[in-house]
Length: 228
Image (cartoon, rainbow, N blue to C red):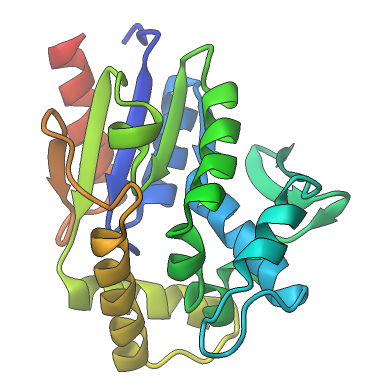
């Protein structure tokens, strides 16, 4: 199939497999993959390590906003994988832990943080042929994206997937605790004032509760062939 020069925006709830799906789509089509969630997690890790957010998720917004201009978050490609770095340090493992997961939503709700991430993504996606995933890619970052996907799945299925990922990395993970964290993140993401998680009017819904990655790839390839 001849691949069109388009932007593919993939939004949806936490732990629906957006990043894994987007990476597969990008690899299949020969597109650039950008993980907006990793950037928000990178900012959150930076805030944690520099004492800008406490255990109760109280944020020193002024300190964080002033520090962002000097924060060098960027992706580097290693053996086909796009990994997040801050300066010369790879932080891919640290940003996937439960501490960051529990604090990323309040950080991501801040307007100046969203502007920081959005500016990075817009610059990277200006040449098209990119796949991006996040919460507001099709509504705020790239509302002009030619193909928008909104991913969802049953909350318990999502929690089990996330727990399995954490256990595979050697971390303790209780499904009910993970489920509670996902539900809290869903609420914060959907009710924040700035760029809340919402389905774009022209997005196509993908409920992958009972789909394999092969099923999802077949689905999107058929969709692209039909639309373009």
